[in-house]
Length: 293
Image (cartoon, one colour):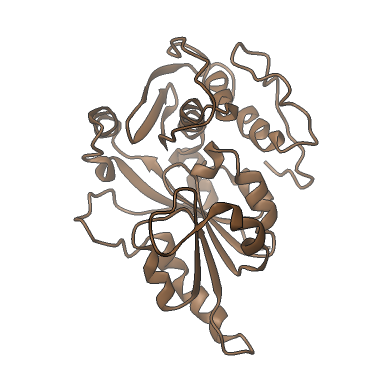
């Protein structure tokens, strides 16, 4: 899926009813989405979907994908039943400025891309699906996996300072990074003392050493610009909404720390009950890194 010049290969994307006019110019950030959508083959039908309170899923002939339900943006415009439609057509919703619709579109992308049969040849590793007690931290989460590299980068600095880590999105326990790095947390809705409003990305990211970026940025359309800003950083995409496609490596991402659905029945229940119960048991955290050059 190499795309060194960031050109898109839409393979007919945009011909369906859910297409978004004006989003197929190769010289705009829409090519990021068009390439991902165009990578989904024709002939795969959507069987079920749910826009849940906290999480959403799309289930197709090839499997199930999930995404964080993101609120806001434009008014919802597609009220049709998506069942029976082409998965690639539903994935077009990832380009919607209604973020609820875009949540379903990104879940549709992951119904195709977040599958072991595609990820195993890329060297994917998996964590056990489990519901953690409140306050617990996974030993194999992306932040802990990168901690030795962050600490080593700080130790190598001639000024004796710490490496600069920027986290886009306020993840649970993100404050622990401040123990070993200079931490900036960019957040759209600032509620914690560590949070900095996300427009600060233009000022912070060009000089950061490590960037951990929530997959929600694909939903709210900030991902292409953030990846431009982090071209000098080691960039990791984090969270269940991460689109698990190696195409993101061509945009400078080093590691995809997302998930695959390990138990579709538990995923359906967790999404539909609105409380997220058993969601951790339904998903298997998955890590794929860009091959060494």
